[in-house]
Amino acid sequence: MKKEKATALDFEIDKLTNSIENIQTGDCFATEITLLSKEDLMGISKKNGWRFDWVYEFKQPERDVYKLTIVSSPRVIQGLISVQIETGYVYMHLIESAPFNIGKDKVYLGVPGNLVAFACKLSFQRGGEGYISFTAKTKLIPHYIESLGATHIGSQLMAINTEAALKLINKYF
Image (cartoon, rainbow, N blue to C red):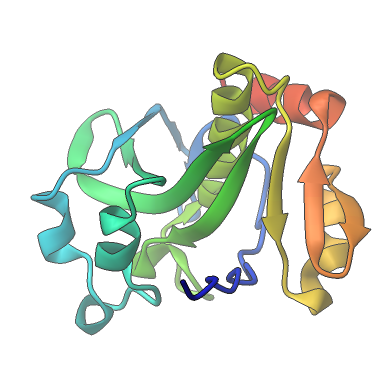
């Protein structure tokens, strides 16, 4: 069986907010993170501006894909995360902000931070003491150390420990 190569993540933490924040107004909005449904996948494709193949992620039996939405707008997906529960930690396979939350014209700040904090919370819920890990693009390793309190384990592998996880969870939840 062919071993799958880990995807090096290249999300940027634009701002650690208490939720997600509208760039124009500075207003913060309550968010909700729920499992992605098959119906949700219809609007998530490369032709709609998404960078990753979320249908593939959704079909992986060992992974769960979650969506971030604003409580008052549950049909508009702000970002997605694919995670796998491992013994003692959660592994983040993919994380992506919605196309309208990327670049200089993005609508909301805080989407990636919100999703990472959720992965930490999930780790606590599943007995992992908040530990999460992910493979980072080399150039972003210092960014994750600075913005998330992540630790560089070696090569491109990063981890967030209990202390850093609690800081993120307390910020968002």
